Length: 263
Figure 1 (cartoon, rainbow, N blue to C red):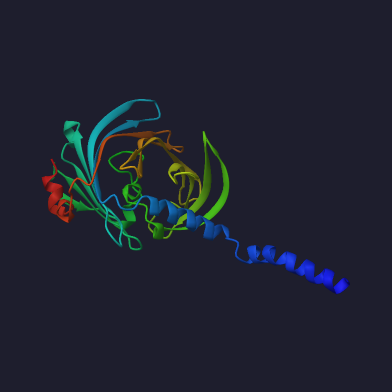
Figure 2: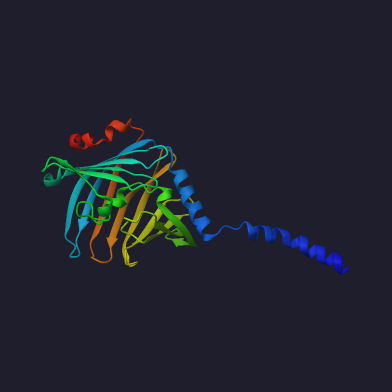
């Protein structure tokens, strides 16, 4: 009887032991969340959108810029992006071209119409502010899975949603961040909030993305992105509109020569 009881107990524990041996580590779960989020945002091909950028200093004084953004999905690499300033007059025609990469440093070029020259953004300068905003040059690159390592922390409520809370650590030594903490909703895998920690491991800024809308019955995009710098008291708000997908953009629309033609 004792032997039979021991066998029954052993077999009853097998499912539990198997579950423990195959349980995800926090690193595996963090990566799995990133993979799922990326999968849900694959296949949009190309898009264009309008954007209003509002800069606010610590005294609450504001200035506004009007931009256009074009993006191209690239198979087996990071996406390409072109950002063009239309207003105000003193920055009209300024344009940023970004070639994101999965593992290598991104390539970025800035066209300054006043100088009539294209300036390459050095990798070591990618943490610098983009046109006086609270967005760094590296924030404007596509967020490829391979750019980070991951660590799942917990699930918690975020507004009316439930979010995965995941740490991610940049693999690029030139990143201005030691880590980011992202709140990603558990239903649609959209980034609701991201905290950015500087090279001293102090909280630098927080990005909140709100008013998501779905396009082509698949792709979610926020209508508002608000970046608050906790160290300077400055903030930048991006208001997005006129999203259009599969508009026929191709590689020829994303070249250094296209920067000078951006009007």
